[in-house]
Amino acid sequence: MTIKTRFAPSPTGSLHIGGVRTALYSWLHARHNNGSFVLRIEDTDLERSTDEATDIILKCMDWLGLDYDEGPYYQTQRSKRYQDVIEELLETDNAYYCYCTKDEVENMRKEAMKRGEKPKYNGYWRNKKRIPKSTEKPVVRFKNPLDGEVVLDDLVQGKVVFNNEELDDLIIARADGSATYNLSVIVDDMDMKITDVIRGDDHLNNTPRQINILKSLKANIPNYAHIPMILDSDGKKLSKRNSNASILTYRDEGYIPEALLNYLIRLGWSKGDQEIFSIKEMISDFDIKKVNKSSSSLNIKKLRWLNQQYMKDINISKAVKFLTEFFDMKNVSIKDGPSLEELIEFQKDRVHTLTELAEKSVFFYSDFDEYDNKLAAKHLIAEVLEPMSKFCQSLEELNDWESIKIKNIFESTINQYEIDFGMLAQPVRVAITGTGISPSIDQTLYLLGKAKSLVRLHRAIDHIKNNTAS
Image (cartoon, rainbow, N blue to C red):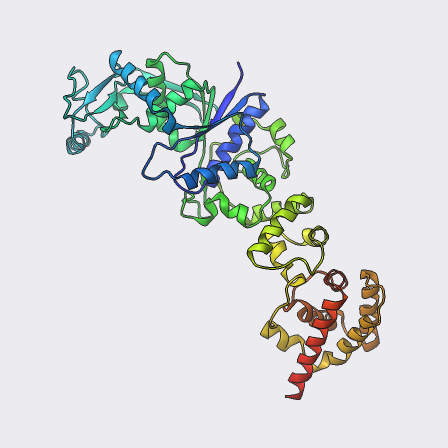
């Protein structure tokens, strides 16, 4: 039998990083077994679902490279199918109309708790064959078996047993006639012939109810794999309000999608001590049965380290596209400066993310208005005026603007004045970048270009002279 998995997010906000890991595991399970992967948008929550959130899901799946073989399907386009199944369950006596009010159901639960029982609906309308009047809008409940048990051989959690007597008759159709999640999801899985359902373990308690509905419809029961939640750094469930929960955060901060997927696959699954996996290796090695039962915590430092490893072999064309968009957003013209390809090759080994690369490269294209005050006060001082002036003069006389020749002039200057490397290097960094951080002096000056380098060095020299005079 061909394995078929699905990812079924709700478009009620930004795509959650936990959802992305679920999508990744489902995608890998399908690809590892030469199966197929389905994308389904569960947009039946009309009050909270938005077109914008749906668009974000589609763009993020594309950005991550998690291609799907079918879909996207939309639940809002399948309402008629859900109604047909609800009618079928009513006709076969596997469902019934319930006219209880919310207060009445709440009282039933309170009474059950007083008796030391599990709080649930008591099945008052279960065996009453009453057809609703045109003015009535009852809900529809599924007739859950009263005895027996549901045995789930979960691919991650192992064997889990649920007693039917502890499960109430859940609502499968609301008072307005719309299908609830537990009904629509099993109809979709049934119709789409999903063989393996991989989802968060917060859905584990829904599973026995869904299996009982599938049995009543004489449908095939899929395999289930309930994966643990992702926790934050404090060991608590990662809230959607946490900025690190949204996948857009990582895209906008310049993380490489393959690095993010690499991090997520190991957030609950591992293969020895191996840290870095290519997509091909992920597909070849992944085994859903080896996913840990325990939760894993999000570690941004580990993710940054991993992304840094991927930066060293970054796809140059993708990086160019990111930097072009970044500089456009910042209104920074890249016409007067090094090519982006050259810049990326120069900076990629020194940064953790594409955004960090871009932010640390703005000075190559855009001049700055002022120096960092503390750094200028520390480094642009009278003691460096003479060696910096000599260094600048030597650069002016340099005909071939090459990194090695710039390096030779720098070393010659510090030797001539018998000063430490940093005594000249830091003032030059402040002069050409406005801050105290840059790659090697010779390479930075080479990439910045002779004209810009000399203008900024002269400005720093003037700054020293003016402060000395005052």
